[in-house]
Amino acid sequence: MLANAALILPDFALIALGFVLFHRFGYERGFWVALERLVYYVLFPALLFNAIVATRYTFAADGGLLLVAVASLLAAAALGFLAAPVLRPPAALLASGAQTSYRYNSYLGLALAQSLAGGPGVAQIALVFAVCIPLANLIAVSTMAQHSRAGLARELLRNPLIISTVGGLAGNALGLQLPQFAAQALGRLGQASLALGLICVGAGLSLAGAATHRALLGWFSAVKLLLFPAVALALALAVGLPAEQATIALLFAALPTATSAYVLATRMGFDGAPVSFLITAQTAASMLTLPIWMAVASGLFA
Image 1 (cartoon, rainbow, N blue to C red):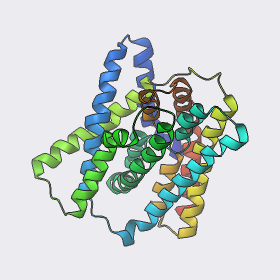
Image 2: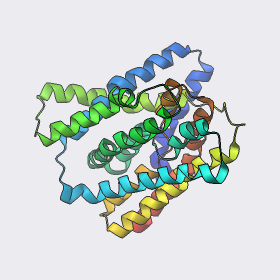
Image 3: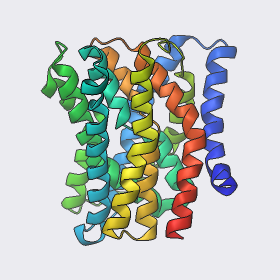
């Protein structure tokens, strides 16, 4: 477990750096907003598009991994919304908060995949993201659109992560070969996205909203950090995934929730404070849960 903790330490150090820079060094909020927009709209889409286009996937080799990822994400979403009959929360809070039970921090996932498995790990988790980013956003936006004036199609069509992943999959299917200069430029943009993305995660951490509906917030976090990876692990074992893919599937499921969950909630007119707290709490808790799940993967799939 200590070895797994050492693997994730550099990435969490960057998150901590972002927190310190925001709270102690006087960078204005506008700086962080601009940096987050740069990462979200330019750097991270470049990484996803380039990784997906450059890797040749086949359903025979990768279908099992995608099956486990999609099925476990759908199970986590269902478990998140199960809070409705059990806890009877306000409908708007359920709609905006439930996304934190199945969405995931892609910046951290790609950085950890690089640490755990190098380039092949990045290619595998990028494929998972290519399928699950549109799916997770579809569930989140369609749920919140029922309580918001924002249109479902408009929110989906303007999402840069969906655009880049769909574009990458289309290019991959067509056998697109990028010119060397274009691939190198996209590669350098993608490399910048990981460190800057993690720093932005740290800058966005906040405990605002901690006092509201604690049972519900605990429910969402338990689903995301405990039940989602448990389901993924069970499915990986049932399907018989190879060790590398099983580890990536478990890593994907064990990630804390996405920082973009806050952006989506506020853009669609919801109270962002509870979502912001969930992002912070899950990110902090994952410093413990991620090494545990990776130790489980090492023990079962070594």
